[in-house]
Every structure is written in structure tokens, then in C-alpha cells.
Image (cartoon, rainbow over all chains, first blue to last red):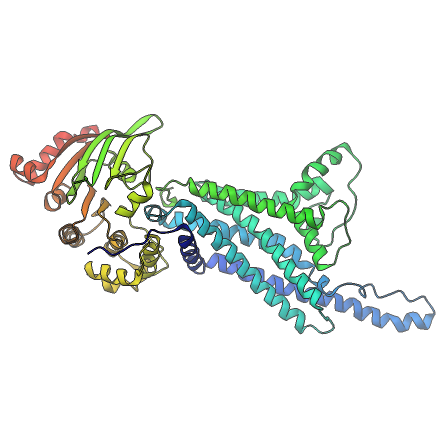
Length: 320
Length: 244
């Protein structure tokens, strides 16, 4: 007797694929170790920020009696007006460097695992629309990045609460939430790019190299060509704020590349949300930055969807 | 009755060369069809097209009355597929793998169906075991389970006995015959083992260099040619090894 069947709906299959992908990802030690390293760095970043702030305050407090005794003018505490979230400034660097790499590995593994294990032909022989498969994979990526950042946010919140002398207002908590939401959107763009690359390329090395190269270009090359920020300065959370030299080259590359400088845009938005950087007239600003990050997600999402829906049913990287 | 498989000038070219020359083939419902041919003859290409994994460059193929290109979704609902090397998520248990593939097939109560399928295949003990720790024969059994979970009308097997020991071959052969007899499933089996064909199949087709050179019922073949040895001679004359 035949078992009654339901026609699989796209909406029903998407969570099935996503759940299974997350189950497989949780067994992937590479992803887990990278994620743990990232989380440790995030917590460390909060501690380092607090420690640096505390040291400056301590030196200022110790210098006050000496300055008063010698009759010298007493300057204001340089950190007095700094918002409490500014001590998390190193996080923008960790998220744009290590976080983006974790997202790339996650996105790559989500697709590569099905191809490497040779399961994909079995999946392709099931009655499901390829768009549903692609949707499930993308959902798994977005959920896993949200989970990673959710844990990071919880770690940050605990660290911030436990640190003395760092009162947080409700507006600060809201800014922290916005910061992690923007970070999620930013990392998703890299994860989607890696997913598309893994679906597009038959070679795993090429599939991983493409998004990593794109990340390197966006992190180090674009900021240098558009705002003359050298690669080492790109590692500093505080922007150099030095105007590029007046030259025909920068006059051309600045306006052309700045609208595509994804990492630069993220760092400007993050700096504004955490309140540690003054407004930079050369940056895209909050709206421009968020628009660029959203466009990057839509573009990479569409390219990934196209690559996954065109993936040959016989595709298996075990045959390479 | 609608044939289980019907192809009309079905062809596949890679870089201009034929991997499968225009193929006209009809497999009646309820048959165990053995698709014979040397390595590289085009058997797997044919099977990949029929299971909707590959799009043909020309021609038409119907599986249970559904065009594999235009109605791929419907065709996939009616078919099951066991690849030559069954590959699943190694770190997951057989049950977890089967549950995922059952859900993709739209089975309402996957756990119930998994239990009954593993029972049918006499391998309930394999359910909780990690796939990565299974032998080739056990994987093949789980591969067969995933293909029949949704009770397909037609089951495609690509070189199912490849790499199995004699006991594994016999067990798999018995399961295929039971599946055909008890559930009425049509079987389409790629193979190059003559002995398997005569013991399992009800009809055969011989493919040579992408061209179907013979197609008949096995009973008729054995009546005309006698035994396995004669069948082997027939196969070798139709698909000469020197040409491979």
C-alpha cells in the first residue's frame, strides 16, 4: 500500500534544508574552532578596550595632584566625553577581519560539504525545487552568522556589565544591538559570496580563494586607493582621518571606488554606532554605508541563487 | 498501461561527441530491466538523464509518463535513485540521513517510514549507526533505503553490485527481486555483470558506444541462446571488447 504523500512546498523545504545544514555544520570542527577563536577575540576586545580606558583614567587621576601642586593648567580628562561603547572599538577590526573570514569559511562549507560528501546528486534526485534548496542553504548561513554574533553579543554584554565604572544607558544598549545587527548584515555579504563561489567553481581551492581575495581587496586595497589608508592603518579601528594627497590618481580612484568600499563603509557605520569616531566627510555616512552593505547582500544573494539553481545534478567534488 | 520509461531519440553530446546516440527505448511497468554495456558505453549518462540529474542535448524521455525535462519535479516524485557509490553525510547516523531525504521527498511521517523501510530491507540495526563507520554493503543497503522511502514507482540503480562481496551481491539481488515482486516497483539497473542480469532481470538492453544494439525479454533471450554462457557470448558479440 502506498504511503500518502504531500507535495513538498518550497516554504516547507527551506527550513528542512536549513536545519539539516546547521546539523552538519555543528559537526564541522574547522568552523567550530574558527567560531570559538572569533568569540574569544570579541570578549578579549571588550576587556582590552576597558583596560586601555582604565589605564588612561588612572594616569589622569594620578597626574591631577601633581599638576595642581605645580600650578599648571589642568586639562580635561580626554576620556570623559567618550561613550561607554567606545571601549569596544577593537571589535570593528575583529569583525571585519576574523569575522569576515569565519563567514567565508561558513558559507563555503555549507555548499562544499554537500558536494564533497557526494550527497548532492541524491538531493537533486528528490522532488524539490532547486530554489528551495538554495533558500534553505542561505537561511542556514544567515542563522549561523546570527547565532555566532548572538553569542558574541551576549559575551560582550556580560563583559560590559561586569566591568566597573562603565555605566550603560538604554540608548547604549540599543546602539550595541544596532552594531551587532549591522555586523550580521556585513558578515552575511561575505558568507553569501563564499556560497556562490563554492557553487560556481568545481575546484575547492579556487572556490575558497575567490572570496578570500575579494575580502583582501575590500579590506586593504579599496581603502588605500579611495582614501590613501595604508594596509597597516586599515587594521586600526580609529580612522587616520588624513585626507588623501591632491593628485589626479586619487581624484579618480576616490570617487570611483569609495561607493564599493564595503569594509570601509562597515567600519564607518560601526564607528558611528559605537561613538568612537568623529563624522568623516569622506565616508558614505550611516545611510550610504547601510545602503552599500544591503546592496552587497542582495547582489551576492542573487548570484548565489543563480549559481545554486544552475548547479548540475551530477555535481560531486569527490570526482575531482 | 503507461510504460515506466519511454525515450524518443534521446541523445547526449559532450563537446560535440555523442556520449549517448539517439536512443529509442521502452521499458514496461513492473519489469526488472538490465541495462548492459562496457564502462563508458553511456549507461550512467542515460540513467542520469532519466533521473533528471542531467539535461539531454536532444530527444525526449518520459518516466512514468512525465517528461524528465519539462516535468522534472513530477518525474522525481515517482522515481528512486541509487548511485554506484552511495555517499551520505558521514558524520551523521543512517537515521538522520534518511530523515533528511525523507523530508525532501515530502513524507509526512518520516520516522515511521524509515522504520518500515529498514525492516523491509532487514537492516533495522543500521539506523542509529554512523554512516562513516559502515561497510560498503551496509552503505549500499542504506542507499537503497533512501531510494525507496517514498515508495517510488520506478527505481534506478547504477552498478548496484559494484565493489560488493558475493554475499553482499546475493543479498542485494534478493532485495531487488522482493522490491519488484512485493511492491511492484519497476527496476532499471545499470550493470556489466551478465550473471546478475540472468538472475535478476526480466528484460535487457545492451548499449555499445552510446548506441542501443539489443533489447529483448530475458526469458526470450535464454530460450533462444540457452544459458549464461550463451548470454555472455551474445553480449560480447554485440559490444566487442576490442572497441572499448
